[in-house]
Amino acid sequence: MRVLAIFAHPRRESFTGALLDRFLGGLREAGHAATVADLYREGFAADLQAADLGQFRGEPMPADVRREQARIDAADALALVFPVYWWSFPSILKGWIDRVFSQGWAYDFTPERSIGLLADRPVQLLASAGSTWRTYRKYGYHGAMQRQIDIGVFGYCGLDDVRMEIFYDVNEDPSVLQSHLTRAEALGRDLATRKQSPSLSA
Image (cartoon, rainbow, N blue to C red; front, top):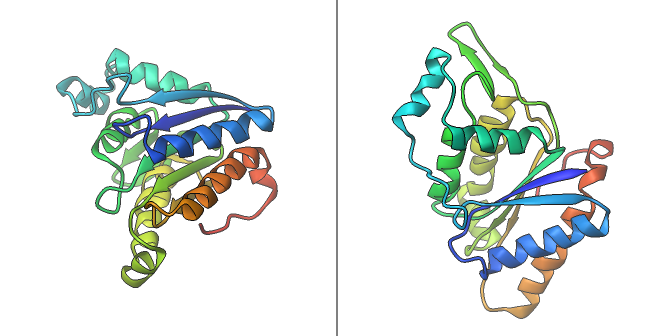
């Protein structure tokens, strides 16, 4: 299996970066190959460009967008590794979605109907969060993120096997951090078995 892992954190040496490393380790242990799209280190331009709007007139997308789309097309599975900012993606990852998941490539919309165009494949989201699970449960943040991201972004584009794992309470407690890292490795190791098992909430 070829996995494209999109990493969105300004510090590669962060705990979110450690989650990426352990996830990649699990992939390798299971015999999978991975490509990392490190959006900050690669200097991805997250702001929507004027040329991007050509998608709505059937015009070719800019070269950097087409490169990202080609990486997705070549992947058998996707992973997004990111910190939770304001109960959602960080801005660089939101901008990546805005630009790359374009009309005519990711979806086809008319007032009568919308069709997802992406070939279905497993999508795993690994999100590091400073708040506790009790906070997410109290305010319904996890469910809101799943509806917005799992369904509103990926499901809209035809990707149905989407799972979000939120790593709560990222702090200085070594036992909590180690448990998160162990879980991230297991997610990488088990990615290829996803189609054989029912989807579970994180």
